[in-house]
Amino acid sequence: MNIGPIQIETKQTRRALRLKESVIASFYEPAPALRARLGEFKLNDWLRAKYWLDVSGLSLYFLDRLIALDLESCVPAIFVNQLRTHWEENRDRCDSLFTELTDLIRALRQRNIECAVLKGISLPFESVPESSLRNQMDLDILVRDSDAALTKDCLATFGYTLDAVSGCTWEYKAGPSGTSSLENLYQVRPERSVEIHLIDELSLATNADRLTRAKRRSIRGELLPCLSAADAFVLQGQHLFKHMCGEHTRASWVLEYWRHVCMRHSDTAFWAEVESIANCEPGAKTAIGAATLLTTLMFGPFAPRELSRWSMDELPAAVCLWIQLYGRRLLLSDSPVSKLYLLLRKEVYPPTPSEHVARRRLMFPIHRPPRVTRSMTDEGLLTRLRRYRYEAKFVIGRLRFHVAEGVGLAIESLRWQRRLDGVSQ
Image 1: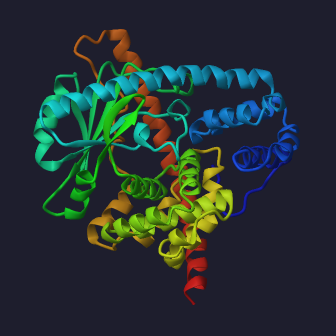
Image 2: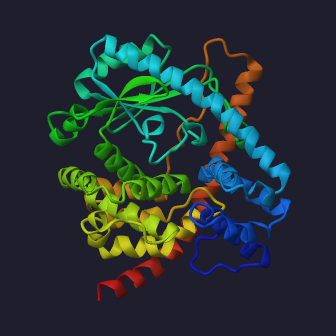
Image 3: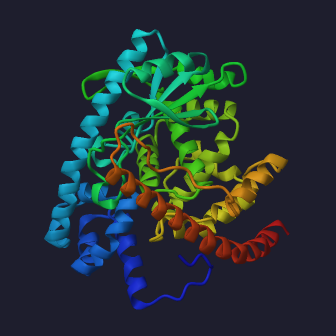
């Protein structure tokens, strides 16, 4: 991927960009306008855009929109049938994840472990009208730090083992390790994954209130503990901004955020509660403001004054500049990952020695990338060789990414600094 500010466009790249913009427009433009826009693209155009639709998380949302507006005939039938097949597969996958989630929550509560479902399945109807349209990879559960050991024991009864720890997030894996690809992106996978998010009651008293404020909500006929409506929105904004400060931001997360705000647009009591919570959460106002600005670039002005006043309108100039320069470009890029986030991270993270070291490692990593497969006790020779081959391809891909994006970032950093100096003057 060329990450420079000037990209030599061919007729095909301009056509591909128009297709992506038409997909985005399908979520807010009326049917007659969309019929004309979508009708210009042929089967090969859609097949070339399939990778972007999948990695952006928009494939099934787009299909749902075509059906709702009776525009399926505007897209080649072969392509629509592919999307329908993925939807059927994703329904099975959502059913499997939901069954696993309800069993885990029931087991945790039986051990008197206070918990709440995060993200994914628990996102409100305002944001995700149908869970089977969302491509969810794992489960997220919030518990108190004091219950971490009990939670680990509970998950062990389901076959989960601790696979990785990142800050207050413990990632557990269970089942045979599989290899992921676009071919099985929507299918039920043999490997299961759960992220346990820990609350440190001693140092983050305000976050402890997040679990205290959790409410039981009916999801698919099951009463599950979920965050309050305002807490769920704050977390949604924080989650989107976290990924903006990382390698990959999915366009579907922006769509879900836009839908959530639009459905709550006139709910002044809701926005007052959101503001109150954001004032107590370190960095929450910046996160929500950045998420709102990025969404505005994608879908046009949409935020109520009660939200934009204390979030988007108070964003640091450097954050606004980064989003305006790179936000839409990254969301519409064919490449799902980029190092441009390091320019943003430098502006929003405190300039501590540890952060300086972390950024340097992210720019020029000298460590081996994390494992993407796990060995099993009864693993045969052929399975092991396949796993090694998959790991090798992953390592080579990451090396290629770091070299190409590292060079591009070095060039873009000089241009970024000139633009930033212009804003500061």
